[in-house]
Amino acid sequence: MEGCKAGTQKKVLSIGLVCLDIIKVVSDFPREDTDQRCLDCLWRRGGNASNSASVLSLLGASSEFLGSFSAGPYLQFLQSDFKEYGISITHCPIYTETDSPVSVVIVNRKSGSRTILHTNKNLRELCFEDFKKINVKDAYYSWIHFEGRSNVSEIKKMLLYLREHNDASNESNHITTSLEVEKPERYSELRGLMDLADYIFVSKEVAQSLGYCEMKLAVNELVENCRQGGTVICPWGDCGAAAKRKCGTLIISPAFPPEEVIDTLGAGDTFIGAAVFALNQGENLQESVKFACKVAGAKCGIMGNQGLR
Ligand code: ADP
Ligand code: FRU
Image (cartoon, rainbow, N blue to C red):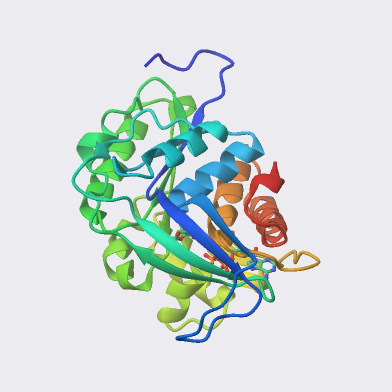
């Protein structure tokens, strides 16, 4: 791969899960052991990092995704969808030993709620050796975002590698890093990585599992786990989002609700994609969080994310 030529847009890389989302749109949430007709059934490319990569691309970033694929029956669908969105997947490993992760998602047309039933038969997670195939040296990437998954020790190696790269390069070649901490059951392990990335996205679910009943309190305390100059950002559903840089002031944005909430699947991933986009463009924290709430709010008002383009 060539280095980044002067004037070429540097890439934003999103690392994490890609899966197939089979979406059932219903007019009423089903009761157990009933037989109900759905309003629609759609296939979409899903997974947190894959969704954030889509939003980055739709907003105009040069977007790349890195994560494991299964060579099973959905490979072509997923690959061609990345292509349609203009997202590069050049460095993704493809494994033959297991199926692709799949979610069946019930989207309730009445409330826009999404209920996710996810299956992952142990598709191998990305490892440091896969990551080393990307070219971090030649000013090719400006930002690398990590979805905090079960490969915590491998992500740690990647973040330390990027730290070494940054320490050895001049300012213009620095790569900004971010990490999503989304699942409460992974918090205890991922907590140890919170001082290795520049921006930490902590989900409302994780914050609530730690006992925080509001976003201000959550960011005020969680920022203490960040490195000097690090930032914690906490999206909080229809309340908007809060953020704080270590030793900085508290930042709050309201939510920007659409006229009607249609589909909240991937709202959090959209928020992250939009926040990374704005920060990567050099926007300040307050404006970036507000922008992310606007884009995520707009997403809740449409099916999927194509309409954000
Ligand atoms: P997740 O999809 O991961 O559960 P959240 O529910 O925290 O994520 O939502 C992420 C962001 O999406 C929020 O910060 C907010 O900006 C936006 N959002 C989510 N739900 C709504 C809603 N009902 N109205 C307006 N914005 C919303
Ligand atoms: C939404 C999402 C879906 C996927 C699921 C995986 O945030 O990424 O696209 O099915 O979560 O947990």
